[in-house]
Length: 147
Image (cartoon, rainbow, N blue to C red):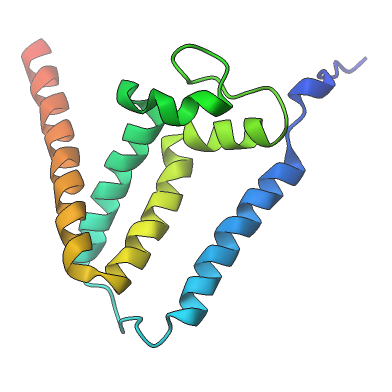
């Protein structure tokens, strides 16, 4: 006999589809409406900055104590790490507690910002990218000291 999950734990597929639709519409809309401003290519330096900044901002939103307030409305525990049990609150809770998931949204936003306001975006991505590198260096330092 198969064990079935309670209805409250069923995956919110319609809500996931809504989030994917919002993301796709925003990204597609930006590409269509901003096509005249799109660069021929994105340089490696910008790619690296956006990648590192997306990593850092994704971790910051999904895991850091100072951003508990962002996650709290769609989570059910004091640390704001356990998404709500059902519906859109669950889907959003899963999005904002997953650094990989929210990182894609951050990356898209930063890439769009890079097209619209390259100087300002490079400054912001440099700040968060530098902090991401510092995180890796700090983790390496701790590991070296342990061994």
